[in-house]
Length: 340
Image (cartoon, rainbow, N blue to C red):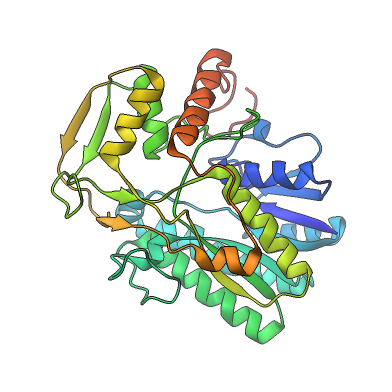
């Protein structure tokens, strides 16, 4: 059996590749390197550069490597960008997912793990939010992912494909062994940005909105360590291989932290009191979103190992320091992540 990991040179996808290789799986990474990095793919994996929407190319990859499953991570993920460029997000996240699913069906791939998002919930009426609450995304990013969920369910019903769609909450941290982490310098992930501020790579941290109906006025999010998330994908893969039914599951810890609490934790762990600037609310940001996470534990037997904000911040900071000291990317083309 060989699993194809789309977007496997990116942040979350690269951690999935590491977990798969650690247990001896055969892995093919498909990535166009628009946001990923070639060096994030271990040499034990087969790497092919290409577009998931290139159906002839993907068909050749599926046939050549005898792909039996696809873990689909390739996507655009920045909420404010989706508001500014909705068509770009519908293309990257919905249209291209449709192409990949068609390639999977034509190639006889019967198992798909899909990278979805808590953004499909929008401003949920309950907290923690369960999977069966009404879905009402408030930005093009969330809508593009929800449309892909619908397509996946329809494809499963029509063609007998089984799938697990995992709705991520806020992913953070880095591989505990220091092999991968969030490497895009201008990424918008809060913990990464705060760590960069602590290291002097940014002038400080901007907090968007201090008047939300939360305990300190800043947004509340459920932060999940990227390795725990990758292992949830492994559990989903085992579920599908064992003949399990299709599932849609939250991936979070069920506990939320405010933006201010996260900033304070980064200051504590780093020992740096970096500047924090308070700005108006940012369009498309819900006030609070925390997972109800009992279903994934019950259905997949998933037990997180890194459910600690201090550890998440410590590992994220260590990764940023490694990037800084080793200067990864200095000799790479910024547009592709390939060597100059």
